[in-house]
Length: 202
Image 1 (tube, helix red, strand yellow):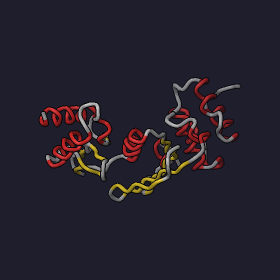
Image 2 (cartoon, one colour):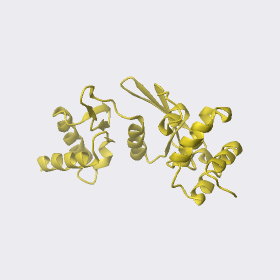
Image 3 (cartoon, helix red, strand yellow):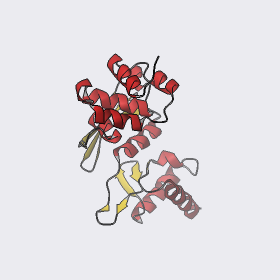
Image 4 (spheres, helix red, strand yellow):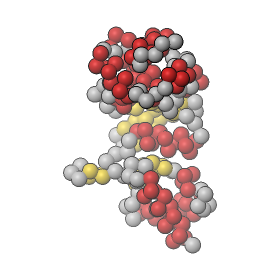
């Protein structure tokens, strides 16, 4: 019986692909908490998965010359949000970097959340979860939400023609209705600028 649990857990991990972060909760449809934890422990000992911290694992990405890579912050945040039933939204310099509006990769990555504030350290990287308002979380998980946070970080005067062109490309395929809905609670200057970039008239 134990072997089949390990097999099923391993199969699910492999199906998600390298880079996936997860917690025991992602497997509770397969067995009890004890059974799942035991299966994960065996897979870790076999070096198939990596334990990032208590109750958090990943199926590590590998690079031909760099070897095993650290986990992506957004994968860690996604696993934690799914475990705790909360929303997360990348913010600050990290949001700008994800869109390609900044070369800066911050050592400390900040996610806004409707859950409690906390700090998670994975290797050398710090991931901060900051509690914010429901209005700030309204567009969480959307491309528009990411752009709002990136623009907040950069400031109006730093969003030049190149940044606008990259934003247009990033948001391509986003409907007018989606833009209007997700910009509902954003600062006025951001709303006006995104409508202009996307050639949306109200």
